[in-house]
Image 1 (tube, rainbow, N blue to C red):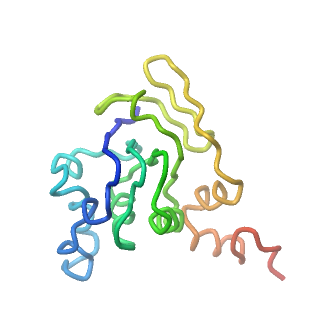
Image 2: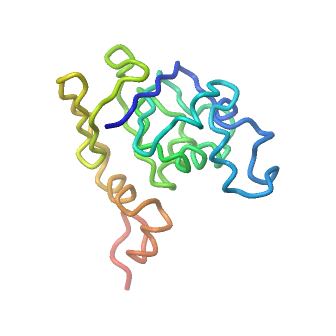
Length: 167
């Protein structure tokens, strides 16, 4: 079971991880897992469990291109983020890290703290007996997720998604 963490629209990277908690400000990068939403929602980092889902309004990840914002979410084990629209650079950074992102508006369907069943590979979510099929991303995106991110994908295949086989 996965817990739903609800957020409003326009969640920016400074709300996800304020700049003073940037990895270069910390003694160890592993400490970054303590800081997602530390000010915007202090209960998040200590209570998020691997596989939990973030459901948000549009424009999730807007603001600066802080690569450590999605990294902090990966470190706490977020299973996927579902929002109607993502900031482009956040989407790319999350993809590079292998974090599944689904473009759908479930803010009026799910509620904070709700327990759901979720399968990222199929994009199938079951909430209160209702099955919700999320829109499938392109095949290359699913391949990157399955590999765990763009670097693991490259290491496994010797190429980037969409390129021909390595020679």
